[in-house]
Length: 128
Image (cartoon, rainbow, N blue to C red; front, top):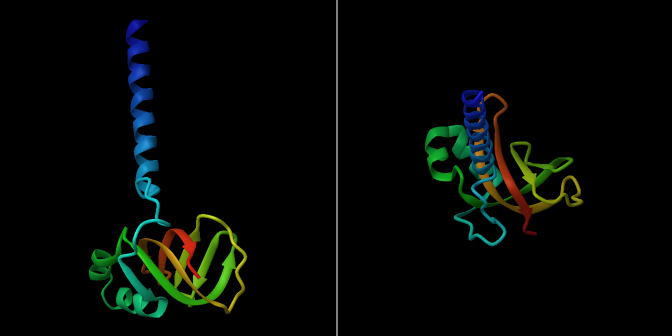
């Protein structure tokens, strides 16, 4: 009986550790991007061209870094804004945005999808 309790307790601890580690990694380690200084200020077209040309080199340069990206809003679906049909930005707070308007968004680069040819950002907020 004691052996079952010890094994169950260890299993619960391991599962909790896995859950919190996953959550920490997926949320960027508790970073506050609104107050963090952006490392790059680029247009959606320019950064997409870099990823299209050499995604490995661009990933080393931009991945998990705070950037400001400007472009034309091509679609808005819930908390996701797409700039210039190539950059998908997941907002922290849903804001009303008009399609075809130009704006600047600050967020964290999470990766480039080769199949969909789309750059993904999360923890985004609208700068202007």
